[in-house]
Length: 271
Image 1 (tube, rainbow, N blue to C red):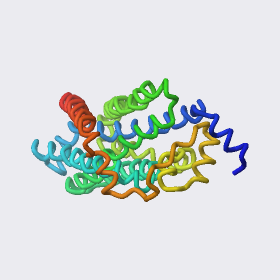
Image 2 (image 1 turned 90 degrees about the vertical axis):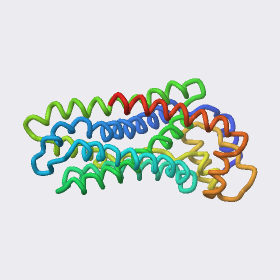
Image 3 (image 1 turned 180 degrees about the horizontal axis):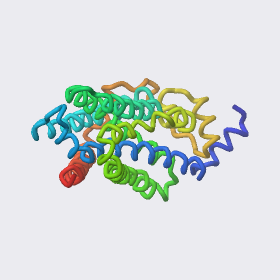
Image 4 (image 1 turned 45 degrees about the horizontal axis):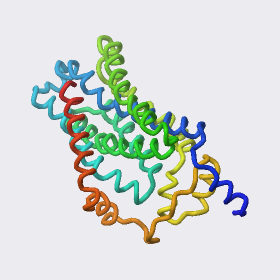
């Protein structure tokens, strides 16, 4: 890379509006799809309760929803760490593809057991996409709009739940619950477009020592290259978790956990 190009990169401190809007839109789409997936069970619950083929009890109906939440817990704990090891973009795409593909399995499911398995596996992707979308949105937002863009991106969750309710209301009376579930697989159609358009995290590329790719990406999107880490060693599970639970981050980690716990308690309690 030439000296002129390096100087140009150093002079650029804010992401270009086009890239910022693109990343926010793609992350919004992923969170919207997640909201639809989470909300679809509530939308089809009346139909499942009266499905003569499965004859589910109230306890079994409740368990189907719990399988999703258990998967989300595991996915949320694992995906952030995995993304620091293998990249935020691949994990975003993998999570979006995973829970969308599980909607196909749920639509096909011949028994409640298969449906429950699909809900658990979908939960892995549902829980994983949230921290990755948040990280990409804040990284690719101008400093003055980080909070606004994060709120805008996360609005997709509520709108996705609303969309599930509206689709259920429109289709359930005449077509049953399976088409409502199948519509949730729609993101699979545009997944190649997401792969093509979504940029990788600059911070990740720098941490992996891929300086050339990072410089090319920074020049394209209008961002200054992040400072390389003090240590050149590649991140590991131990180092990532060690940073989260380091003494200097204990209070912040606890605050984030409490805030997210109370927020999700409110959302799922109302639902």
